[in-house]
View 1 (spheres, rainbow, N blue to C red):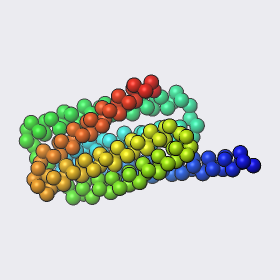
View 2: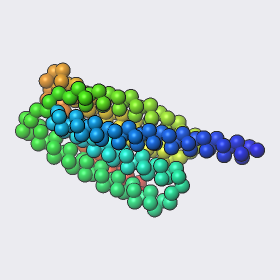
View 3: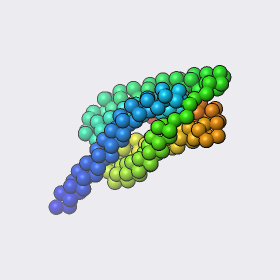
View 4: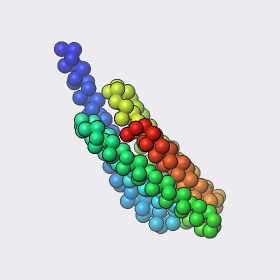
Length: 200
């Protein structure tokens, strides 16, 4: 009887984990489209980089969904390495673009759409990160807990990009946009180190 209750609780927690990951997945899929439109319209490096980050987060959520489904470790390792390569490419792109923008004095336009989306993303990601941390702890699932931390950082990145867009729009500080790009470079390189140094 006790084992039945435990299994029922575990199944409920797994369902919650799946819901959290599918919401993350859905938000980031829509985000890629919104951020692409906003980045092109404003010619913003930070928005383009955040859009690429959303693409990588889709991969991260997919890995967790596979893991929660009981998929084999080999596939998980391969997927994590692909995510690591994706983060490395993101860092390289942003490093070159942000440096070029600063060196040339290229000024991005204002982006009301980008500001609204990044503000919403920050709120949603913080809520999802909290849910993943609690669910991962209850399931004793390190993969879900780890991805929850990535979701939290995603929310913090949204705040950084929003700050860059806001400083550009409100104070004319055009260089805040590429500086926000450098924040994303740091995050991307940190993720690469974490993935490849953990033995995955």
